[in-house]
Length: 199
Picture 1 (cartoon, rainbow, N blue to C red):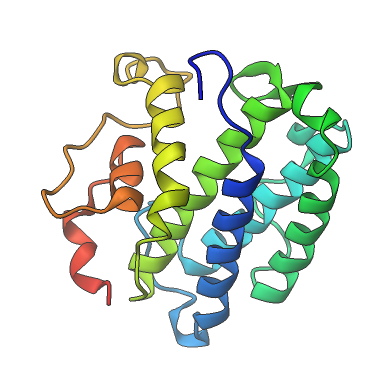
Picture 2 (picture 1 turned 90 degrees about the vertical axis):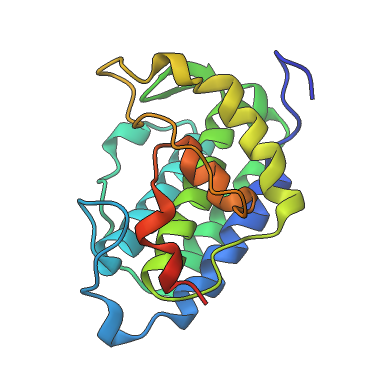
């Protein structure tokens, strides 16, 4: 992975979404109103936001406008999310999608860069969901480490004061933090009030 040309994000996207499907499958009805590290979301709306994120990945691969996709989807269940992810993975399997220019909240970028953004979002919100529902909060480290490297390159700590940057200040990781938690820390998550709920 070079500075200007990160590795293919599709394997990491497949790993991130598979992890989230498993997390969503284990969510119980009595957890849906529980708080999450995202102040705007309870478990239900976080799950629906994850589905919306996958819907945006579909729309981008199709050459559409991701801004037209609502921030919160109509469904929050694992089955609905998995169906959208299957469609996204199928569309992104076309190598041409990686080079096509697309418009995302942080500008106009090649498809590969946009998909890296959705990989990071999926892992971070997966961590949010896991700690909020008492599930193991570390995804496969070999899949997360490259995402952390890309996040550190493209959303450096120095830009966090910009009002257009939707990330809080970098949080110093706990000594025992794994790569998924460290990625969450890099995007501004303070794990200390949540890690005690993880299994």
